Image 1: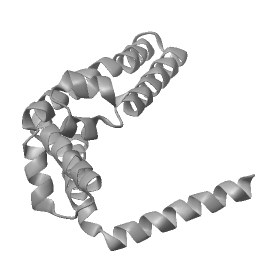
Image 2 (image 1 turned 90 degrees about the horizontal axis):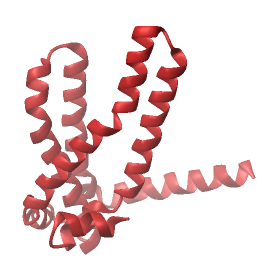
Image 3 (image 1 turned 60 degrees about the vertical axis):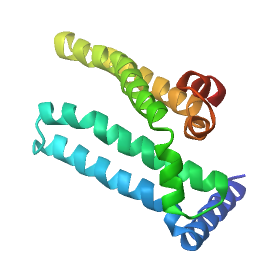
Image 4 (image 1 turned 180 degrees about the vertical axis):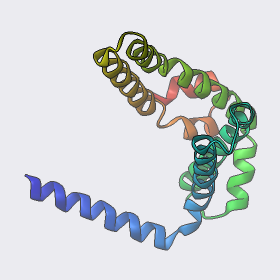
Length: 170
């Protein structure tokens, strides 16, 4: 059984590498977005970006992240490598993309509550169990949210409203 799983993992990695080699433009928007997000996180973690500046950057960075995801979804859906066509299609969905960013930010805030409460219980009462349960619950809820919203970028391009997109993505 383990050998079969290992074979499939290697096969997926091989096919993914070939896809990247054949169509590198498809990964450009997400790569650029990931670099920006990483610089942001390192800046926050190192103290180079103040919390106030970090809060001000959340929305624009979220828009860049959603826009790049919409571009990749557009290229995948239309089977094209044209960045300009993908950018135009993604830009056509800017209102829904902006609403999606706000929805994801608010959802992230709600999903972090169990972890925050757990860590607060640890700091106040020294309860490692509360911290572990809170963090685990936040991780599980985040995984569930990620699974439910996996197809949201494609539906944002196709649907008329954010509500329709969210409803049809799961």
